[in-house]
Structure formats: structure tokens, C-alpha cells
Length: 173
Image 1 (cartoon, helix red, strand yellow):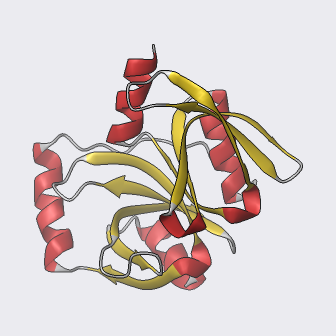
Image 2 (image 1 turned 90 degrees about the vertical axis):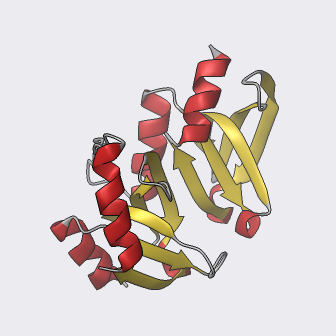
Image 3 (image 1 turned 180 degrees about the vertical axis):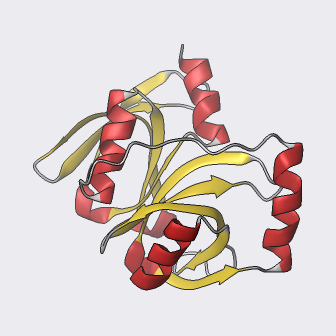
């Protein structure tokens, strides 16, 4: 799949990406970067709106589709919603480290999913060290709700700048 991810990144092709955790649905977007462990996709909602960045496990990909009628429909809807691409600084570090840097330096709320999607933390990443990630959790109203700690090796997904995270950033201020 690395060759396919490379081509999608180079050609900036909108694609559907399916993974083992939810094979019946997909994430649609543009591949921003990838490595052997993780890839970053700039996500599009099912109705053609911008939905932030997702960092996902590369080995979890089971299928990639391009040029489908679904993708074509989204490409028609995206201009209606003023979809525009955002920059994520890429500095040659691992994909996961780039996401940690982006979230940390810009003080962004993110969602960290572990356990195949059964467990997640949403909030500000306050520390990444010794193989652990510490998240200052936020509840659905944006209020502080303790801390959560997970092992970096257990991460399945990190989402940032999605509609949900932007809503929490607004509510937390």
C-alpha cells in the first residue's frame, strides 16, 4: 500500500480509504504524508465539507478506491461548501511525531483512539514521553475532565481539526 499512498500524495488524488476496524465504511480525503507505520489524510465529510486531519495506522488499510461515483459527487459538493486545503507542516520526522508536533505547538484539541475504536480520549496532548501520551481531557461541553494516558503503540487513530474537535476548542475557551 505504500506505493499507492505515495502516488495519491504526489498526484493529490481524492480517495476512499477503508480499514480493518470499519470495513463497511471509509474515510475520504487527500493523503498528506505516510510512512511504514502511519499515514495522514486530510478528511472530507460525506457531504463535501472539510473535516480536519486524521493520522491512521498504515497496516490497517484493506482497500483504497479512487475515481468512484462517490468521490465524483464529493468533488462537486466541495466547492459549494468552500472546501479548501489546509497546510500541515511536514519536517521529515515520523508521521506520528509530525502530528504530535502539530497538535502540541498549535494547542489543538484532538481525539486519540485506541483499542480498535472502542476507547478514545479527547482533549489537549500535554506530554508524549517514554512511550506514553498524556491527554488533558475535555467533556462534550469543552470543560476540563481529568487526564488520560495511553501507550503510543496502542494508537489506532488521531483526529484533529474535525468539526467535533473545532466545536470543543470553541467551547473550551
